[in-house]
Length: 114
Length: 116
Image (cartoon, rainbow over all chains, first blue to last red; front, side):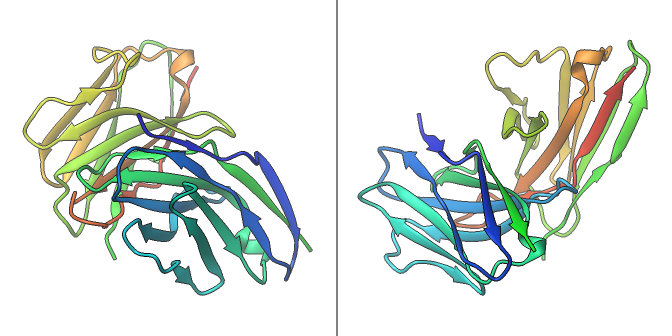
């Protein structure tokens, strides 16, 4: 079974600085999808960024980018120029190409200090 | 973009009451919907997978008679917590997907259930 591990329960960053959230996963599949979701205090789940495993190029969405290392099964999220509104719980998630079920990591609580 | 509506957002009721939570996909047909439970400061725990027109698939340890799921159409799935007790108090979230390619699941805003 696939597993997703986020080894950092909590992280903090100063406003305008850069922070990287770690995520590793375990799978025997060669093709799959990876996602980062953000859950602010409102508890709404918001898609931050996604990556297809067959793509070598790292996905980027404005201030958010990923470092996808397929061989190492690592999928870290980098947040540049951190803003107060980035404070939230961040979940890494895995999905097979043949299904729609998501496997979530434990989450990382990000605090942004002014 | 795709929107999933979940209703109600907050429920407070007495022990023994049955509570129904609705999850609707507003602008797309959701062949599959998922129901999650989330405890404070924890990850989402998948309870069941709901497929339109067929029985839901429950995760191990989830009581199907306690958490009734109905997916009668491509835009609506319901979760009924039967004879709810205080230990059922939690945050419940639904998500819906088309099941195609890299399209992500879209989440409802969640339902905070409090059983007194």
